[in-house]
Each structure stands twice: as structure tokens, then as C-alpha cells.
Image 1 (cartoon, rainbow, N blue to C red):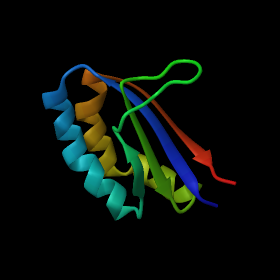
Image 2 (cartoon, helix red, strand yellow):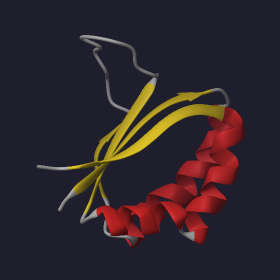
Image 3 (tube, rainbow, N blue to C red):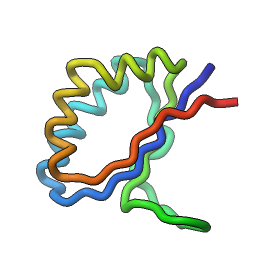
Image 4 (cartoon, helix red, strand yellow):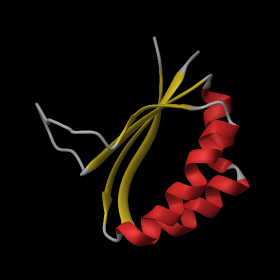
Length: 94
């Protein structure tokens, strides 16, 4: 079943966060992920959001988790986590 990574991010240091993006993007592709939304305009209709929203489609939950826990993505997170506040979740499609 298709799984979506739903990511909301407030970036505190764009220069440092760019180092994360350089690694994360190719790693998404390596695991067959596809960006459906990546930092476009957001209009909040209810509740709260962060500055940047990303949606990534993966083939299934196992692939999504393998991506997240991969050495490459964990290395990327080393750049992202110190300079951002993030909400990151996987959601199964219907």
C-alpha cells in the first residue's frame, strides 16, 4: 500500500539546512520516493502549520522506513535536526 511522508519544517538556518537537502533528495530517489510537494505555498485552513511542507510518496511502509533509517538519510538528519524544528510522519494511503 502506498505510503506518504508528511513533513512540516521550520528552518532556523537555511545555509546549514541546504546540506541536509543535498543528501536527502538523492536518498529519496534511491528508495523510489517521489516528491509530490516540496516547499510550495501553504494556506492553513484549520489548525497550525510550519513554514515548509513536504509530501513524499513511497511504495509501501517498509520502503519508507528503510529510507528513513538508511545510513544516508541518517547522515542528512545530522545537518537538519540542529537547525530546524520538524514534524515527520508516514501515513498509509487508501
